[in-house]
Image (cartoon, rainbow, N blue to C red):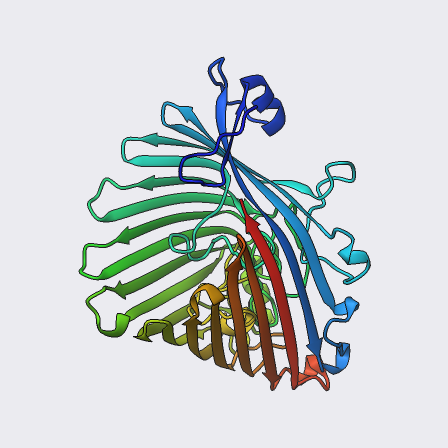
Length: 461
């Protein structure tokens, strides 16, 4: 094994392993020449901490108290290899644990690995795939990331300690001029849970349950087929259209007795010639569930519930009035989920966030059904001193949710990022204001506030 540093000073190591060693270490059947395979290694080390302070009567807490704080120390190693003949291989080994912080400073972790109870505890194989390029088409098979720009309803999220990944078969084609075609069969995801609950990176599921509204939640618990076309033929414009066929949708009455079709459109306009760096975006989507069981249909009718579509629409615009300042305005609207309607939320089926433009740090539940949301945001770049972003969002939520979704919700986010000595740092403060909650569920907690502080440091190598 030898380390090689390239001429540009990139921090990269090349490890030459024999084919036999590669097979034992990384569980791959790739066959290499006798001289071995060149494995390029990259990765990151992370320290992550989050705490909250709520005046909710049911669970009042104080900032930085161990019983309402979470932390992790993690290490991630990426391994990439050229297998020749247009074959490539990639894998990712992830360690995430508490490093003793979960026994002293905090009582919980943001993410865990629980695939075993022996020496491999806290270690997971979060990526392993083989890709093959044939002419203008690339096929990718295995555990991998899916970008939101091409897969808006099943995408990789980056807000937690480490990103979630998917078991999928992916095909990308560029035969048509100025057009990228993507086809995907997505079977499962590594879990990336919500803001204040633990996400188990080894807890694979048939995509995540994304609960909806009404007396009976609707959730996705199956596989998804996706086709996406992205086109840049129009001047200054990128148009992305996606279609999903989703299997095994549960209605809350019977399991896996429904299916759903979903369509999503995103239009982005940007060009250096536009005044003040103007950028604009438009998004629209439809989630259409189908009842496939007569027994389920009869049960829903008996409960007074109706299965209906969820429709989404969003607009955003940003300008750069001065070189260091970017101002953004966002409006989104989602219908469905009112009264006794049973709907699917506009959420990532492989995570927790929403593809809506109005997604902030913690408002995904409020913006995913029956709401109108306005977000104003300003970002200021201070050069070597980092950047600071201030965002304020207002949501009028009219959905009916047995879990008690807020009728009115406001959020303030203040985020500071800086890179120093090769380490990236983030410090964030979030203020959540809940008003008009379902008092039948929340009793005296119809109005309360919640404060969140998040800190992390990442060293990429």
